[in-house]
Image (cartoon, rainbow, N blue to C red):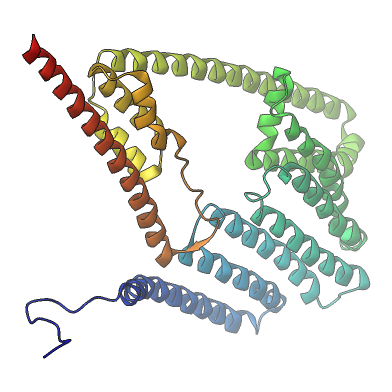
Amino acid sequence: MSGSLPRDEPPPSNPAFHKKFSEMDAQRPILKRVGQLVLIEMAIYLFFGVFLAHTALAPLLLPMAFLAVCLMGFLLVKEMYKGYMVNDICMGLAILGAFLFAAGLLWGTTNSSSESDLGAVAFASVGAIFALIVALRSRYRAYYPILRAVAIALVSIPFFIISPALVRSGLDFGSAVAYAMVLAAPISLLSLFKNHSNPNLSILGRYLSNDKNMIFVTLMAVLFFEYVIILRPLLAQRSPDAVVLFEWLFVALVAGYLAYYYRSYLNRVSQDQLVGDWRSLMQTMKFDKGDLEGSSRSVSLFLEEGESEGLIVLLTSVMLQNGLSRGKIEGLLRGLVRYRAEEAPPLILKWTYGDYLARAQEARMSLLMSALQGIAEALNARHLVTAMGDLRT
């Protein structure tokens, strides 16, 4: 019958159908895991909700609901997405959950006042801004130090608002936290000096550019103002001499810690520079001697991660040993030299991430095979010319 397929040939495949089918296979376990996590979290919240509803801890139900929603978002993003923005978004959701928990505590109190209601709105608003800044820090890294300082300064607003209410309830820590945030904000801006030509400013900027170090500095500022505003007046009434001794001891400990950190950092920097010089020298000697033991690793690094430097050095060494001219080598390696790895997507579903990696590796494999074929042809042509010359002589 005309137009019918031969019996010994399979029917033509549909690439779009197979791609969609493979995506569905990849989605199934991930969505199942997400559904299980959501059900477990809802069960835990309902259990504690029923338990707390008939106790004095009933006001915790609202802040726990806010925290549960943010935690659910955290789990969904962590399970369903990949990319360099995933951790930042999860951290932003965690920060938002903490601020909404504080807002829920203020809203859930039975003796709420205008100060507590305004403070709750301020906590929710500042938390949303802070979470957004953290979630987008990888996308706007150049502006992140300034945005981080603004976010830290904004945190002081809700604490200033609720400070009078806290004083009346006997918990006078709101003003101390607010002053600490006002102090920490300009300190955070010193991270802009991390690339400064002055080594001392550069060390300080690199230290403060790390968010963990900045959290530590902020906590120290909070403890300092808690001491100055709350603890010091009480101690001064009972034993003024002990206060002076304690403060000088604290100053000595802080100065010792800063000196130790500064010295350790300088030692690490100098060691890294020495190791880097040694490695580059050894690598040059290795390839000059024609040692090609690292060929498989160089190829794997290029195919899997897009790092072409080691592969270029390897292939250049091979062609130089076989007598190819520098101009010929530059022409054969032009594609590898110009290659730049495609930037990973900031946020991508996990079941499509495998396709993205496969496409990137396929493109790198095609580039590598093209370069190797050109090198093989050039080497064969040179060997042929050499053999013809030997025959003539």
